[in-house]
Image (cartoon, rainbow, N blue to C red):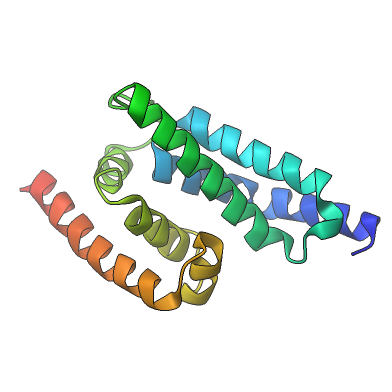
Length: 155
């Protein structure tokens, strides 16, 4: 990819998907700090590796989710992450993020990438380094568990 074209694609990805990516990462991690750091690091790495990236948008999502997952594991080992910032969310959104945090990381990331970010299952599998079949299972089990968790809160 030509350098100016690569820079344009990275800039377009940031402009068109930056906010959505941050929200998805926040829903995944429950931490504004981790979400912002993961997105920033992914875009910075994209700028450094711009000539080696074929498809910028899925690459950014994949890298940022992997960085967020790594930081989340570190944080959960060192400190209980309860009481994270609510990032000016409605009560319903706070309940959803709290319920999402109770899912496995693969279920949570599959649900966020598919239902919130709007990626088809095939792309979710690529972003997560998984298979379409595994993503379908994570979505099915995760939705069922999420529904039960949210009904518990309402009941």
